[in-house]
Length: 293
Image (cartoon, rainbow, N blue to C red; front, top):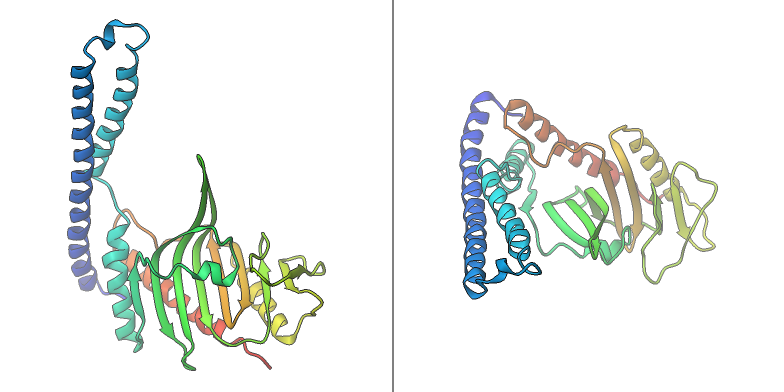
């Protein structure tokens, strides 16, 4: 938890990080604004008679005007834009360092990770064609030295002008040998390649999928109870729990998630975020307690 003096120190540096981000955005939008003006002037010089022809007179005002207006608005907004990047690049990184010191842990934190994007294809909870955008990546080890990873991520696919969000929340993964293959889902169907999973119609709270011609084991019922208990949280919108290839995976899509960005930083915001990150670690512990027996 944070004291008032600690908040002041973090907030002062955070404001510098946010200001630096605004300056960067202003430079980018100013470049595009200037480029738009230059292109419009060049086109005017090359085609000076375009405004005297009824068939072409509308082209420059419409397309040039839209481009100018868009870049001008972007430039003006950038002066007061509250970017999410300082939260993940600085604030949450500092928070995990404090958690490590307070709890005696060795968690590894990385913002906007570019390499840990294969979990979606390996675990089969969501389509393998989804683009994976990771905001926050955390890696740690259980007492048994099983590796666990946490991803604050968004999974999307695009087709033309349509963008579909398949998942937007927190994805947990523990590399742990469990003698089963199962998926317990709020909606959708498994996307595991090479393994046929069939839905068990007797379960109604979730869509439960098992390998063809296999029945529910004690381990599977443990997983189902865990999912059912977790699903009592009214803030959970959708949930996906699966075991495949020695990995236990849980994806939670919240209705409201407060660890992205905030309009301001104060002691309540920091302590709430700290407590939430600790609750994720507690959830990892609960997941790890699911065992073969």
